[in-house]
Image 1 (spheres, rainbow, N blue to C red):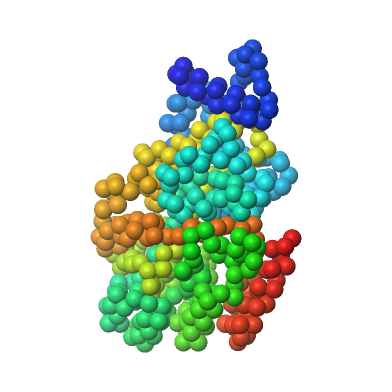
Image 2: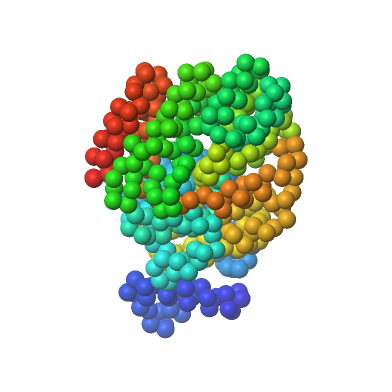
Length: 427
C-alpha cells in the first residue's frame, strides 16, 4: 500500500473520531483497521458509474473492495427510506435523486460542512444551483452532486418539417409552443406532448429566484398560489382543451410507443433523456430528433443525482465513503468518464471546457446539443429543497388532474392545495 495513502486514510479516520469526541491513543490508532468493503447503494445509471470507477479507487486503497448494491429507481429510494428510518442495512455511500434530498436530509444524512469533511470549501467547484439543492432549510449540506439534468425541449425534426413549423417558433414562448402544437396536430396527427403535466412541471420552475423554494419559502409559507403556478395550470388546461396531449404518463408503455412511432412531437425533459432514447427507448428514431432550449428560455433543472453519507454508520467507514464520493464528484477525469461513457451530465465546472461538449450527437442528427445544455446549466437558479417537496408534488398533480378532468376552477384547486400543504408544513 502506498505509505502516503495509508497515512491519509488513517489521519482521516482519526479526524472523524476526534470530531465525534472519540480520541484514540497512538496504540489504538495503529491497530485501527477499517472494514474490507465499502458499500455503495445506487440506481441506474449511477450504479454503473460507481462500478466502472471502483477498480481505480480500489488500487488506491489496497485491501478495500467496493460493493455496489443496485436497485431500480423506485425500489432504491424505498429501501433507503427504510434503512434511514430503522438504521438497518445502511450503505456507506447513498445515491439519491434530487427530489429526495429534502426528505432524506432531515437528520439521517451527514452534514458535510462539518469537520473533517469541510465540504463548504469545495462547493465553488460545482454548478452553483446544485449546492443549494443539497442544502437543507437548516443549512446542512447533505450530499455532493454526481450529475445534473439541464432541462431541454426535444422535438421531432421530421414532424416539424411536415407541419411547416420552425423550431424557433416552437421554442419562442409557451403560447407559440401551443400554436405550433395545433399546426402539428392538424398536419400530422401527432400530439404535441405526452401529458399536460409535463408542461406544468417546467413552468412552475420558471422565474424562481436563487434560493427560493419550489413549493415553500424559507419561512414554511406555501407558494403554490403564485403567478407561476397559475400560469402553469392555465397552459396545461389549454393543452388539454385543444387535445394536444396524448394523456399518457412518462415511462408508461404507451409513452414509449409514442416516442417510437412518432405520435409525440416533443418531449420536455432533462438532457439525459437523449441517451435513453438512443440506447433503448427509441433507437430506430436516430437522426429524427433535435434539441432546443425550453420555451421562453426557462432555465430549469430536471433531475440530478447526489451522493451522501448516512449519519449513523461506523466512523472509519465515513472516511472511506467521503474519499469515494470526492473521487466520483471532484475528479475531472472521473466526471468526464461518466459523461462520455454513461451520458451523466457533469456537475463539476472544471469539465466545461472539454472538447466533448462540442462533439456532434449522431442521434440528434449531428447537432452539438451539449453546448445548449452547458449554457442552460449555468443559467439555472438554485431552488431550495424542503422536506415536503415530494408530498407537495403529489398534491399539485392531484389538483391539476381535477382541473383537467373535472373542470375544477384553477383558483380553487390551488387554494385547496395551499391549505393542505400549509397544514403539512407545520408538522
